[in-house]
Amino acid sequence: MSEQQGKVNQQVFETFIHHNCGRQREEVLTGPGFGVDVSVIDLAAGMVLALTSDPLSLIPSLGLQESAWMSVHLMANDMATTGHAPMYGQFVLNLPSSFSKSDFKIYWEYIHQFCLEIGVAITGGHTGFIEGQNSSIAGGGTLAAVLPKDRLLLSQLATPGDVILVTKTCALSSSAILAMSFPETVRNRAGAELYQKACESFYHTSSLPDALSAVNSNGGNAGVTAMHDVTEGGVLGAIYELCVASGCGAVIYNDSLPVDDAPARICEVFDLDPRYCVGAGAMIIACKKESSGEVIARLASRNIPCVEVGELREKQNGIILVEGDEKNRLTYREADPYWEVFYKALKSGWK
Image 1 (spheres, one colour):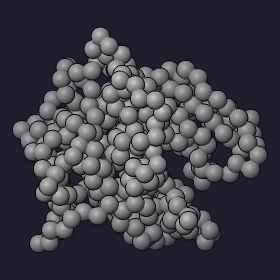
Image 2 (spheres, one colour):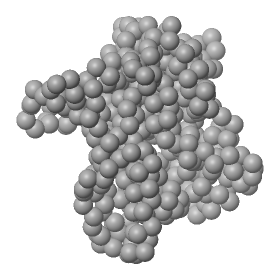
Image 3 (cartoon, helix red, strand yellow):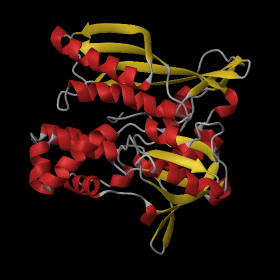
Image 4 (spheres, one colour):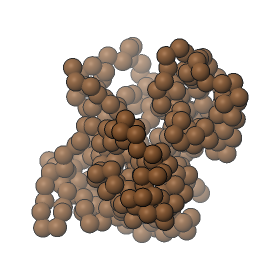
């Protein structure tokens, strides 16, 4: 079998996981699914329990504070797609045996701080030090929230006719991490100004503010039908996943996709297409056509850029990417190219 990096693709999921998920329980309203960010359990009385899990990060080239930020906020980004903030968290840490207690203290204090800031109570987990552990993945975590069933958003609830909105920019997290991990290379090839802009964007990789701003906190979801977090596969991959989850087709206008100057130039340095790179911090939002302007305005009032990039169609129309005069079916890229270039740059000794 060839080496694989990143999350499993749709074929592996459908073949090995989808039909092998233990006992079926009727209260499980939403279980594992391709393009599905959260699981949902019916608690009766009009309430549900939403759950999401993700790896935890410990990346020496970034730092302890930045690694803790990613550990908390990449999980929170998934929960944000419900239109609500997470409430409870469980953390399982498998740390290198060489990881000092002083560094662990710093790392965990940042985990605590970032959870506190978004209202998450840490309710338990497991912490251990493992010989031979040298991965940038330091374990895994789960966030949970108790929500009103009628205020819950899910990626599978998007419908044909909804417009597709994208917040912030393509390749937000990947360009920031590459700049911070290889500062000398990026400064030399992209310039000090773009390097600085990319580094500053790291703390914009939370899409929780995007999600909470998109919906109407005074009641109802203000025309928003679904949201999906941008992770591996980038903005185009996330739109594709939203379509699969909701059973829709789509038309996407390439020229409307947001690509800021810093991510564009840094992706060029690493020979990456920003449309397909890890983009945590951006959010895909499906909303009713008549609500699009209001959603964009609400986000703008909180200094979160958002643009309309396409429209959902009936499934039989396919997922079409319009580039100039050409209309082609969007191809889902199963391997995010970010991982390959990151580790290639490390092995090549890029600074």
